[in-house]
Length: 329
Image (cartoon, rainbow, N blue to C red; front, side):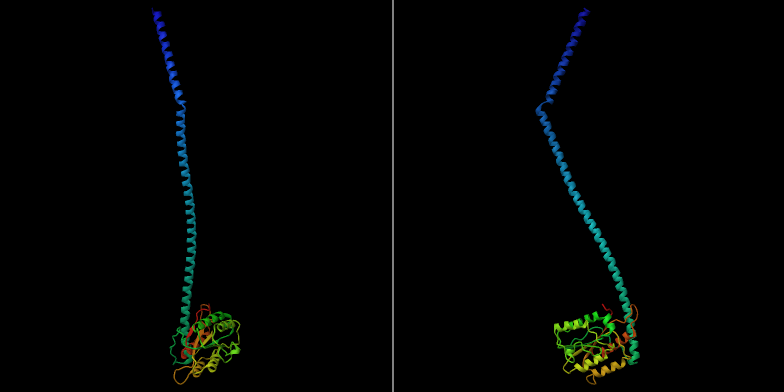
């Protein structure tokens, strides 16, 4: 009895094992069949491709943005570099301007001191030469009267003027001619009374743009003898060219006076240029002084002081203006 029960129990267990294995095989076949389903594989592959494509598109977008940002960064760096260079140049220019301003300020201060010294010396010199009756009446620096119909230049052609001031002489002659756009006649003498153009000796040079240009051109090589005294030229100009119906202005250009005294010169010119016992004058006498004999940062020479004193008094007494230049440039 026990043996039959044992055999029946073993048979039941074996059957269960077979059933379990069969069921497991069926499940395995179902799993394998599902995984190997072409439709499922295609769906999975399509989903994967879509995901990969999406990731690729995002990667391309990121790379594009990266390129744009890099270009912008390079552009900003270039702009920054240019701004730094510009700031450096502006700083250099500012430093240069500050230096120039300081130099100009110092130069103006020196010129002001020098002018004050010259004015003091001129006053003392005039008091010594003319006498105690001298009064400081001439304060004219600008405002040249331009009512004349005829112009005569009396130019110091000495070596000092030729070497140091000749280019500035040309400029001043051009400036003077420019304020007289149309005159009836022009003449050019040196301080000794010698004519620039012998063909126009003792007669007027006709005014025209061509003749004005020729005067300036000829001046470049014109160098007759000079004794650095404008007296002879002024006297020759008045005696030769004055007539009652002519309005004449004489412009004397020089740098120094080598004569002994200015008092006799002032009296002689006053006597020659006075129409009658009144204050009327035959011609106007203007003068421009060139600072050739001024030591750098120092006082002018004695001859320069005498020239300034002489021409200042002559121009004042004869209805003109004296201008003392502070530079040869």
